Length: 330
Image 1 (cartoon, rainbow, N blue to C red):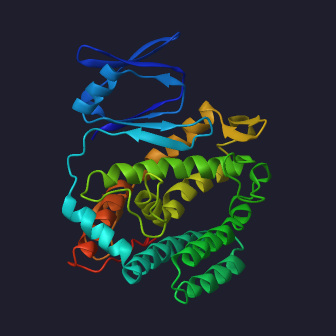
Image 2 (image 1 turned 30 degrees about the vertical axis):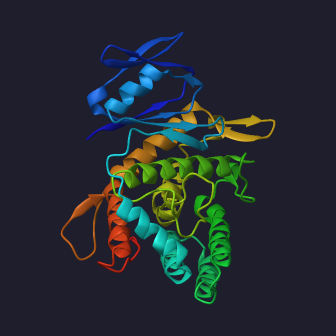
């Protein structure tokens, strides 16, 4: 299985003959072409056309993140699975508001059910989250009462914000109080963790979308406009609770992440390199974790489950089988 390469330092990515390497004042590190699927760049890194030409030949995706760990964009090799037919089907379901609302509701249903799974998991372990569960169930019912996708997106935001209120109960870690959701930049350590983890998942879903015939530019819950990608945001909502949030809870409950892993800056808080490595290590482990799917004998990784989710959406768009979002069984 090919691996992801994470680059946190500043430097330059170069090609020499048929090899790639990263170079800065600390030295030179070669990148194994055959075993690399993508490179995620967090530092200030220069690349040139020769490097990009070679990564295209090797089908290596390059993802860029800004100083705060937010996803900026990707350099992707020429698409091998693009499909005019699937783009038309995606557009058809987007333009038909009834069809679009149906898919958007299912994304929210999957995301909310997985949020409730996480809350009930910790409720069984003595965390007092019952009030949050009740409120979330009440908001979920309202998603069936609106025909406005913007209202629907707002309700999804309300569910998520209510869920965040339980984070302090789950972690019981005064160094990582939630306070409120803040972005661009995050205003405290917990928000920095959430933002960084979500960025990793957006990229993971985007990578999996490129392995299907789907076009990431056409989403259903998030409005398709001049923003480059929306489908990966939609699908990521389903998996945030059971992948990103569980990683954060594990690291905080085990006291592995500490205040020393964060930097306070004029406008916000960011993870330092050691902090990012800790979260990425937990995240990679989570993605590789295999679980048994309901109704089958298959044990598959979360990475593979994300791919299957996209195949299910393809079948829905082609009229082969109604889409049902993935809901964790644990």
